[in-house]
Length: 440
Image (cartoon, helix red, strand yellow):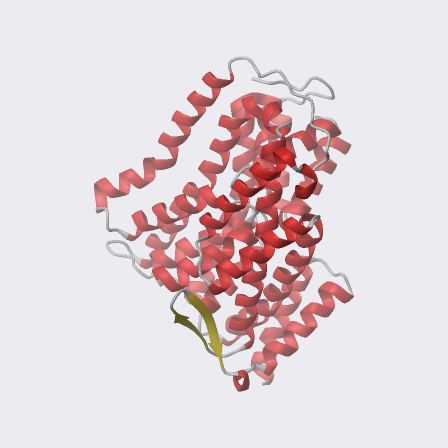
């Protein structure tokens, strides 16, 4: 185990209380969550210093999964070993998971009520603006060179017009960045001077092997249990397999993977409709915890609608639990298995190049998500069309929903003009949507 060499070292009980507090108030997405953790563990508590915090953050950015939750897991591990990492990682997710479960039940049981439908209609407009805001923010940070801009454009064309799989885009971008960074690091936005090499940590392979074996067994145990008791074709198995695959390719954060997930969930699996996927993101934005908790909503509704042999609510709860389990157990596995190698990973130019390329491609994927959301929010009906390998979306311009346009304009003014917070924008738009439902 690695221990903190400088700063105050808290007791496990003190750290537990802090992680629980963070789990209850970590609204605002990964950027806000990382900033809040920095303020608490670096500035206020002084549990780790600035360099150690940034060192951990860069490591987490290399991994698939929610980087803010993984950063909490890593810092917890740094302070108190495995039990510290488990406490920090679980508490970062658990409060938001319970809130999302309640919202999922309300959504499933409350549809058809004017106030609920109106609020969801308003939230859709907020979601559109939030995704555009994420596109602009990540694009400014990621697209430092012409090559990265080209990767973003290629990713958008590949996924929007040719329906290329998101994992293929991630792997291809990583390969380009990995190869280019060796001879032309500047083209990946990296410094020309190679970083100093760091001596490998002793016993790292043993630690990684144990963590991997335990993590894999823990990850797949619920899926195996359902296969043995309910059969391999049960909806809970499908949920477990799908979101396990998602956990391996979630580079770039929730906004990036949403495009892949939305198309698979809506167009391939038929678990949700496109408007319901927009609702899912809107609800996730109002809860504490990682934004990727949006997957829990999907798992709940998928099982709720294919409940046998359980009641609908029981099946929904089991679907939500399965989704959350296979989403976050792998994200913690990467930390426990990879932490022994953190010094080498942090100083690898090729891996840094791969990460930069993935982040560049992610901008194109988020642009695809923005266009997909805009079409489904602003127009009544959108049809996916194909001609050979080419894919596009057909819609009737005369079907433009003026109410959605007005709400999106208000949400844009609040976010970009008045710089209001994310939660304030979502709640305001929910209220306006409910009012509009009664007035118009």
